[in-house]
Amino acid sequence: MWETLWLDARLATMTKGGTPYGAIEDGAIGVEGGRIAWVGRRADLPGRPDSLASEVRDCGNRWITPGLVDCHTHLVHGGDRAHEFELRLKGATYEEIARAGGGIRSTVSATRTASEAALYESASRRLADLQAEGVTTIEIKSGYGLDRDTEAKMLRVARRLDAELPVTVCTTFLGAHALPLEYEGRADAFIEFLCHDSLPSAAAEGLVDAVDAFCERIGFTVAQTRTMFEAARGLGLPVKLHAEQLSDQGGAVLAASFRALSADHLEHLSEAGVRAMAAAGTVAVLLPGAFYFIRETKLPPVDLLRREGVRIALATDCNPGTSPMTSILLVLNMAATLFRLTPEEALAGVTREGAAALGLGASHGTLEAGKAADFVLWNIARPAELSYRIGGNPAAIVVKEGEPLWSDVRS
Ligand code: DI6
Ligand code: FE
Image (tube, rainbow, N blue to C red; front, side, top):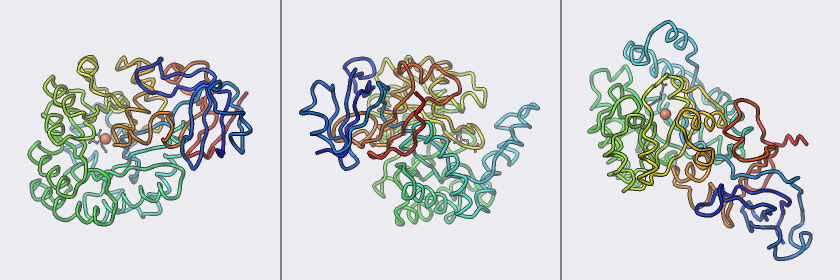
């Protein structure tokens, strides 16, 4: 007997190679022990519904998708940058503000002074917005501490969100996000500190699932990024990279050479970068919220990524400087409108491909037997509505590991 059988649903399983969206009309999902025990057409159920599960739930012919995955966020941080936003609207550029000691550094000060409890409180509020729109798995980066204790504090908050709330959190160490004031003019020494002190101590505390860096003119060089990646490799940790966001530094090629889980942003990605990612199986994570917010005009090479078979994921990049965004559904709309992804590619980007970008492809991201019972019931007539609408939240019920955690069933 299963615990729950969800009946009378239309499933967007998001499995590859079959019908669009992996759709199953008149579908059913059996849940046992937080996992999907069975999924398929109701007609193929191995018995009468009430003989199969202790609880049978009628989905009212709603669409069900996998739980959504936000695979790139800076959810934990102190303060906000609304003031900087105001300056930018008066003409200052992002790079000018960063060079003048604003930008990331102002968030670093706010994050250093915030207590762990305050960081938990503000991050859980942002997380609640995402959960309401169906996010059940999220990646959270450090990178606003830039000293040993604050980097660890941020990652501890991320781990606590995972432990205390119905969400799966993957943590990423992003010490190489910006150069802190105390290392001004000594970037190599800062990288040394990260590799030999901050990262190993966070890893020893079990706080690190992956290692990231910001490879950019206003961030770190390819050589410094390579040093970070070598330290990660020494600790047995997978890597990913903020690459080619503002300029082409060759970061994606480097990331691919370390078999990175993902390379993210990629507006300035070269053909060589695309080919290297394709060969390495590195997922392209596109972040249309940041593209929109900084009014970038160079588009990521979506056609080339498609042609070379690079998997494309999407995420909010939720951060106070370049993407103060807590709507995963708006990401879908922006990806379709700005990057010309199809609604099916966009939905895959926050399910199957988002899970792949986190190394969770075997356990999350599609509706398949054996995977986590993370899924969302939607008040929509067709899956394309999820990327079509701007505003509004059609999520009816969000299910995390078999448990309905939020429900607003409008008939
Ligand atoms: N790229 C980004 O878009 C964010 N970090 C990064 O490496 C911006 C972070 C910030 O401005 O606070
Ligand atoms: Fe980012």
